[in-house]
Structure formats: structure tokens, C-alpha cells
Image 1 (cartoon, helix red, strand yellow):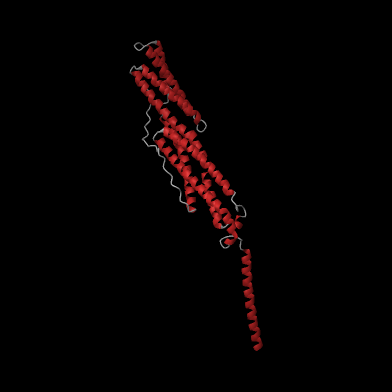
Image 2 (cartoon, rainbow, N blue to C red):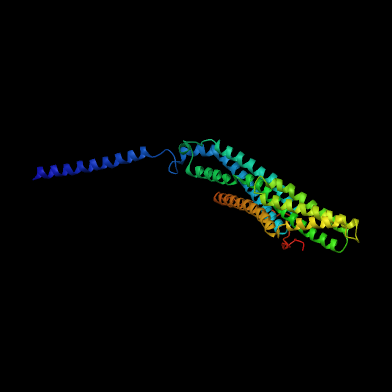
Length: 339
């Protein structure tokens, strides 16, 4: 019994030793398998974090400045919408012109920051070996935020080339219609000199519309506009000949007046019944281009603000534009067709 009891005790002791050795081996394997980075081993990434830290600080400052420029651009976009609603086209042109250099500066600074971030020390396929997770996350936030400005320059360029032309064009069409109506009123009252001057003014508006039509042709279908311009120019010419003939013989109907009157009636019958739909289309083209640009800017602004908040940075305040356009009711479009 004593011998058996001794062997049992020895077996239990050896079993305990084997268990302890197994646990120790498992710990050694786990230690050897641990990646040489991460929060558990900050001493392994200290040098890499210290090397990239100044660059990340400078990049954060650059991103803050870009965010301020995007905020300013958003204010200009909203101001352009207000100017369009108020039909303040000079203000609209000035606002778009101010935004042009600003959006190009945003593009250049963003591209420069993207290159700087890509070239920072420690970045690349082996970044996990030399940089802590916190540092890598900060770098990723900066890179994702600056990407938010991609495409803003193209949006603003499309806006300036198409939307503003459409907005001005709608104004020219309305001015022409209203001026022709006043010319006809003057002609019926026998004020032929006044009528001729008003027809000439209306025709000038059509020629201005033709110039804008040429700019719009690159982005929108202008077939309907071309036909509208052709018919109205023909009517303006017929009306001019009628008033010239009437001025030459104000008290007697001459063959020249009869021929001019017949040509005026034919040109009038060829006119569109109303230009309201065309004016609305041109206004919607302008408003749609502005809306797309403003939406793109607001999306970029939101992404930048979110990134800066994640980095613990408070965005710098931006002053509102001093010359914010007032919004006035949009006038209704009359039916210009003479009766």
C-alpha cells in the first residue's frame, strides 16, 4: 500500500509539472505570434509616430484652411441662388466670378495636401509595423476628408458656363417681349419714331440672346431656342418696315404700307403663341445648375466638418459676404403676342 501510494503521488506531481509546462509553452507561442505594433507595444511605434507627427499637425492645419474656403464657397453659392431668385444678374455674375478663383485655389491646395499625405514617413504597405493605430486612423481621416473636394472645380465651371447664360437669356427674352408690346402700343398711337426706337431696343435684346445661345449650345439643346429667335427676329424686321412706311406717310395708306402690313401679319402669325414656357425652361436650366453646384459644395463642407470634429478641431468661423443679394419676387411673364 505504501509503494502504491508513493507511485500515485509521484504521478500526480508529474501531471502537474506537465500541465504547467503546457501553459507556459502556450504563452510563449502567443507572445511570439503577437504583431510588433499596436497599443500593446507602443515602444515599437514610438519612433515612427514621432517622425510623422509634425506632418500630421501641418496637414490638419491645411485641412482646416481648405474647410474655411469651402465654407466661403458655399456662402457664394447660396448668394448666387438668392441673386437668381431676385433676378439680380449683375450680382449673380459678380458672385460667380468671385467663386472661380476660390474653387481653383481649393482644388490646388487639396491636390497638394493629397500628395503630402501620401509621401509622409512610415506610410505604405508596412505602416502597421511602424505606426500606431491612432496615428494611422488620423492619417486616414485626413486623406478621406480632403477627397471630399474632388469635383468642386468642375461643378463650378459647369455652373458658370451654362447656368448664368441661361439666367441672363431668360431675362433677355422677357425684356424683348415687354419692349415689343410697348412698341406696338406706341405705333397704334401714331408715335412712329418712339415705336421704331423700341423695336430696335427689342432687337438688340435678341442679338444679346443669340450670343448667350452660342454659349449654351455646348451644354443644352438649343433647337427650340433657335427657332424662337428666328421667328421673333423676322417679326421685328417686319414691324420695323411697317413703322418706317407709316412714318413716311402718316396720313395716307400707301402701297408700301399695305405691303408692310401684310408682311407684319404673316410674321405675327408665325410667332409662338407664348414664350412663357421657353422662359421657364431657361430659368430652370440656370436654377438646376446652381442647385447641383450648391449641393456638391454642401456635401463637401459636411464631410470636412465631420472629419475636423473627429480630429478634435473646431472649424474657423467664416464671415458672411458683405454684399449679400436681396431676394425680390420674380415678375410674371406676359403674353407678348400682339393682337
